[in-house]
Image (cartoon, rainbow, N blue to C red; front, side, top):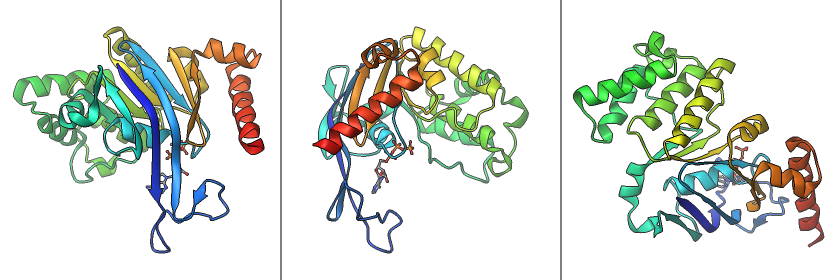
Length: 266
Ligand SMILES: Nc1ncnc2c1ncn2[C@@H]1O[C@H](COP(=O)(O)OP(=O)(O)OP(=O)(O)O)[C@@H](O)[C@H]1O
């Protein structure tokens, strides 16, 4: 079980030389800080798939980076299996598989060497590591290119290497930032089937996506993040019912609009 309680994240805005300089007309900018998260709470139990959805820049990646321990929240906490994860971060890192949208692959390593490297970082060796790699390479249809250098791979191939790198140590908690980006239709199906199977193996799965199809077919829970706030947590059926809409697309759009007009009025 993983629970986010009242997460807030404030970024310091860098000056001209920084890459993240912002437009000062942005209503969320407060002087030299930017409040990327202003209250994000949700809970994902074992054997559950939770989908994080929301507009661009809403705070999904920031939330996932906090869950994965890559970022420290300014306020709030993460509870894993009843304990605050800041008390045992190394143990938590072993339990988590984090797929970041920005992780690069070492260009001169082959896909196989790259995955092997991460397996070793997790203390895996010899036959057990080779067996696990071969199992995952076969599962994701990667045999034809595992001995190619990473800089020769297509976007989708690189994404598969990243996915496998994340899963090599058989984590119990999956935290995936837009995992299907760049994957072809067949590979998306393979990946979603893999997540369904993992869910039945009692894994805890949280992923961000812009695909409401993925949400509807796979997720037990949706969390909508908008302007740094979790504005809905529940099933897709509950969201449709609450919004009085038949399709998830319309229910999602209506929820976002309603929240934005409430914020505008406040
Ligand atoms: N290191 C940082 N410094 C300053 N601002 C940041 C930093 N990282 C993220 N932000 C800002 O925080 C906000 C939330 O970003 P985040 O990447 O979490 O959004 P997102 O919901 O994942 O968006 P998308 O769907 O486009 O990937 C954005 O306005 C972004 O510019």
